[in-house]
Length: 155
Image 1 (cartoon, rainbow, N blue to C red):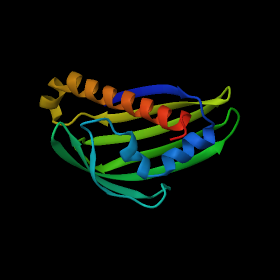
Image 2 (cartoon, one colour):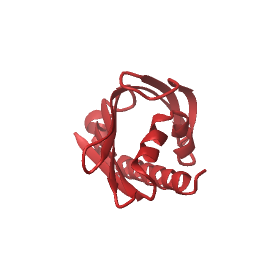
Image 3 (cartoon, one colour):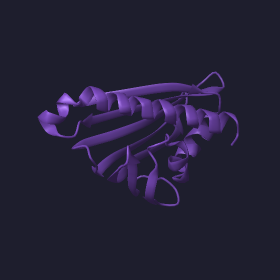
Image 4 (cartoon, rainbow, N blue to C red):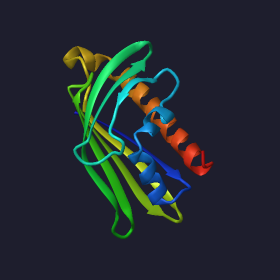
């Protein structure tokens, strides 16, 4: 199993960052160029048990995803934290679990994505893993920057 972690700080309140992630329309807003969401079937609001179906394009290749939200943990505790956890029921990856973690700090919010996954393609896919990891890292870097811009600029 592989793990990808990406963190960034957003100068916005925890509640605003968390609420942004509960709105499924924001998924398409934060996708990098070339990684568009072509078809999106989502609930009105993200909640535990919700299912999301989408067709995501990457480098001209359309990939079907079926994701279930395992948990929605609203802001709580001290320091204040929140999280969303989703797992792919069907995707290009044999296993894909994504934790969106948020922690309040100094008037802003630390946002961390932790993705546990098995690379597609089995042993053959493992040879291509460095390239796949780089693509995922670039995608999460873009998504974090875009989220920061939307929240900090109030767009």
